[in-house]
Structure formats: C-alpha cells, structure tokens
Image 1: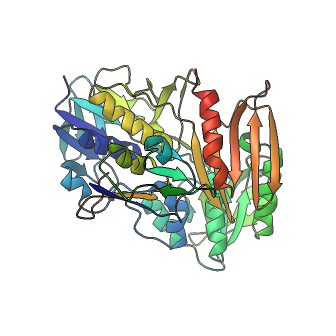
Image 2 (image 1 turned 90 degrees about the vertical axis):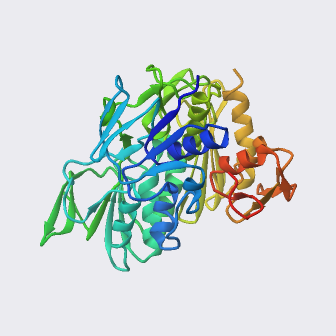
Length: 380
Length: 68
C-alpha cells in the first residue's frame, strides 16, 4: 500500500524533484517538502556562474505558485533537529512533522579548513545566501584568494576575474584537476587560468589567515610565503549533510531505498548502489540528483525504477564549457586532441575501454560519447 | 496538449531529451537540440524537460504554465 504522507527533508534539486514526480505520477496523499533555507528550491549550478556574475538574480527552479498548485507543502526556513525513525517523527523548532515515508535529501555541506573557520572575510559557497554574501564583496580591484582549484573554486575565479577582481587560486597539488582529468588537461587549464590573469599557486597549503581590523590581509602558506587578499573563498569540496542520521553518506539501493522500511535517500546525501559500477557511489552531480529524486518518487509509488545513469557534469569557466561524461577514476591513459579553445580528452582503462571523456567547447560530441559510455557502463 | 519550446542558447547537447522522447527531439549537426513537434500530449515531452540539466526545454500547457 502506498503511504499517505511523505516528508521530504531537504528542498534542493533531489528533494524537490522527488515531490514533483510524486504529484506528476499520481500520488494523492500529503507531500511536505522541508528545507532549512529561506528560498524555494533553486538551481545551485548558477550560484558560481550567472548569479555570482550579477547576470541573474532569479534562480528558482520553478515559477512562483508551482508548488502550491500541486499541493506540495513547502516548509522553508525549517531546520530539523532530530529524526525519530521508530516513531516516524521529525522535530523542528516549531513542532514535529510526521510521515509514512521519509525522504532524506539533505544535500552536502562545504568542507571547512579549521585554520580559516569563522574568520572575517572568509566565505564558502553552497547556498544562495552564501552566493549573495560573496557577490557583495566582488568589486574591481578586490583581491580574492580562492583556496581549492576544484570546480567551485575555478568557476568563482573565472566569474571574479570577469568582474575585475584580482584572483589568487591556491591548489594543493602540482596541477589543477590532475587526478581527475590527467596532467595534460591540468596543464592546459593551468595555462588558461594564468593567461587570464589568475595568480595560480600550486602545492600551496594554507596555514593561517592574517587579519587586521576585522578584515583579511593575507593567507600564510606552509612554505612560508604570504598571499595578499581582502577576502577568501574556501572551496575544498563537500561532505554529506547527514548529521541527523549518523553523519555518513546514506547507503541506498538503486531506487533510493535505505535499509529502513519507509526511509529513502537521494542526492548529495546518498551513496546509491550503482549496478553498473557494482558499488555504492555518492555523486554530487545535477543529473544524478534529478535521477535519484525521480527514482525515490517511483519507489514510494511502488514502482522500481533504478537510477543508473552515466555520470555527467559541466563547468563554465574562462571561456570554456567543460562537459565531463563517465567516471573520473579507473582510467589508465588519456588521449587529448584539439586546441586550447576546443579540445577533447578521452580516458581509457588499461584494457582499452573508454571510461570517461572531457569535452571543452564541443557540445556536438557530448551525446555520442554519452551513448558510447552507456553502452560500456550500463550494458551489463 | 503541451507546447514544446527549446532555448537553443541554453542547450549543451547532453541529449537526454532524445532518450526520453525521440519522437519529439533530435540533435542537430551542431549537437544542439531541435524540437520535431511544436505540440504534444505525450508524457515523454515532460520527462525530457525535467531531465534537461540546462533547463533548456519548456513544456507549457494551454495557459502557458510549465507542465512538468
């Protein structure tokens, strides 16, 4: 029998998608979508790009009225303090929410650097509020130190440079993205960042922040040098926001069911079983969150629809649209082809199978690579 | 009946629309999606709009509201 009341904790893409699909596919019971932020569900990928650049303010996933029209009860600014799985209750500061089915879609939180935690002028970027706070700092001539040359860090660096900000980009490794994308691509990207005016420092380990009068002055590196800055962004990855339920990524089957009956998980908080990879994998990608939210809705409706898509993400930075398809690990050699403004990198396993590809300004190759990978990865 | 609109400036050639609704969408030689039908009542069109990571597809009802 299908449950009468679904409580979805987390109003990001995975949770809101789950609510939408429940309604679209005929669920007639109560749907409560609870999020701790003040904003209705929004497009997170835009935060480091158009929103930060000031080109867009409205990043809502759905038009106003969408949730109400579908009788999805949106509970914003609702922080859940405790989840009592046995009694099927979630405690909030304004009372308890009950459920027949619980969906944990609590997302992820930025990793912190203890040395910079809570210091003035130090930002993280995960939420809309974070993005507005960072945006309010970005002005021509500001010196911004970005700690971590991952996708959030490099996208912010790109946006900031376009706004006339002087950017230092600090990477712990010898090259950005070397582990994920290989050294050759790492060199191409490093060169691109530097020629755009970014002060890229590699093998840089931040030790402390020097501040005066409540403003940052410089980051001190382990090698003894200082990087002058007026503001800093810590972008060193994210971890599942699952403190309420043990703090680890929530393992689910491919349909998003946890081991507890009636409890589901999806999105960045979940490590879903991937039949093609024969492992539990936590993937922080838009397409995976959407697919998992959909799979959970269908599981609640009593239909098994396993999510096992080819991993995909994109990044817009320094005049490149980077699109990555497939897995970023398990490759043994990489074949790079093209020019700095438009190239492809194909990643092969030892036995020669294609496991992933990076396409830079080559949208016309994405679908065919994705199909080729689906053939290898999902054929089994 | 839904109206199907593609913002080709947003499309990045991911191609999930073609997987969801091959009768409605194809990718052009530039890799960018093209709508094969302007209108439809098939659920595949809604599915395609939802699956698009760039939000490039709008499926609108008679009142011009998102049907997804």
